[in-house]
Picture: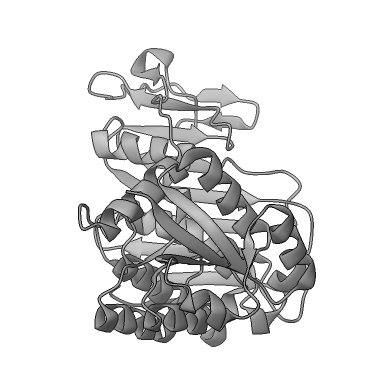
Length: 352
């Protein structure tokens, strides 16, 4: 069955959706767009898309079954609710809302109208994330206790509307929404405490260099960091488990996984080991015969070939959504608490 879709907001992310759908999703036809910017409408017309003169015109088109909301963050709620009330299923770009209360309104309307509503959390299908998740699910190096996830750049201030508070800008909304979603998707336990350090290095309005600490009920601590002023990057992932360590350096997924060999027991001698930093026992290199290096899992991931077919089958009543709005609500509640932590200046307990 072929379905028809329209896009509200035809900027960079919407163009990415459009071309990916055209190239890879034959069961979905993008008919047209609505955008308040003349240049965006001109680009859409050049691609042969219908350019609706008003949002009401788009929502009144009976051929449109599904709407993608791909605008600045501050108007996601209103556009999603208007689309749902017009009888359209909705995919919203992330962050889906500016706070949990807004998202609760959106979810309530989707239930009232009995329509599909989901969020494009595309980074659940990033290859680096899927590799970490598989290692933990398989128990290859044991039980995790620290999971460090970082995205770091050095280009300075946030670009365009993302640098303005009124539009829902800042790194917590821009990248935190991804890294927090990945941790909550991967760790099967409630969050019991949140701490965070939000720095406004280049702006008086929005956070641009951030560290977040999430403690989970199963004694896992997740560390998320996203920065715009880092010139020597940490690994993309550093995962500490009770039977080994996993490092993924970058989005190309170079890295290493080291596992304890045998029972991992160390025989402690009386001799002190001398290193370049002087004598030590505890921090001396581990004997090579007590560890072994394992290959990283081989995975092939494509968010569009998973996300969009799932949405279409969910519209047809054949599958449950992979990205449920209730999952997005959990992420927004964590983000609400991050901003409260920043306001009060210390970590806070919770159960999310």
